[in-house]
Length: 398
Image (cartoon, rainbow, N blue to C red; front, side):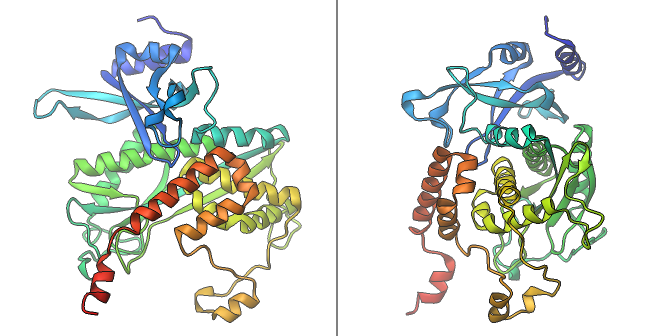
């Protein structure tokens, strides 16, 4: 099999040594769902050279029927071999597979402006030209439920494990370890993992990388967690709040900014160790945070956070005074006096915030903004057609 440069030759050598038969060409639609087209190893070289064509009008947010022809070009630096074998149905034979993240192109050979990965990479160009370099570390949380046993309300919860629980209370530990082991074999550095504050919720912490690499890894992590959990009879759920009156899962995102090899957020002379850049970045993020909440898929979320922070730096937006007290115990009046405003309470509210935030909408592009607003309003309309259990309980006997 003829291959290209040293990196490509090394990649094919590893694939052949591991008996990989299929490659998943991965990318995300505009709302952030991972998509895949599968190619046998024998066709992977052609995919690297010429790309794989697909119907962009069938992928949410990419294209209409009139200009649906698009193609994917794999980014070989993202190639990961899955550390498990998959059976052919109920046959004893098994096969190995790998995944690689692709960039999306138009038929004119241009990167698609509707690709979330392109949007993030494109936004980073301007700060890079000014000498800024960003790094991101994340701590994603997710639920691990025994298959078919997802409680609807707190009263149905049978688990007892809590923060930093240890076996036997932590019944998800084996699955979590298997997920971490798989990620480590795929060269995705997990720094720690543990059970979170409530039953079923687990957290993984990852080593920092540039924003695009971290977003790529998050998409792979989500896929690996779901795949490995299924092998153990569990279901990994990344929906933030699947159980009523119960804790939600979330994800801490840690940003750092460097210039000329130095931490641009640090100032040893400052009482809190924060430079003017750090203060302004925080101020800009707080200024735009309501619109940011509309864009929590990794590529677009990082783009929005960076856009808000960079606007803070460029506009010298000072953050409000630090609050050290427990705001959960503050009255609404006290919060208002201290300038503490709530995040949007509904999807409609966060969409309106995105609609009116020029900085965030410009960062992701007007076409993308318009599509996401339209798509989310369609979701709201679809939801409003349903009668919920709460409504039946509340009003059935009226």
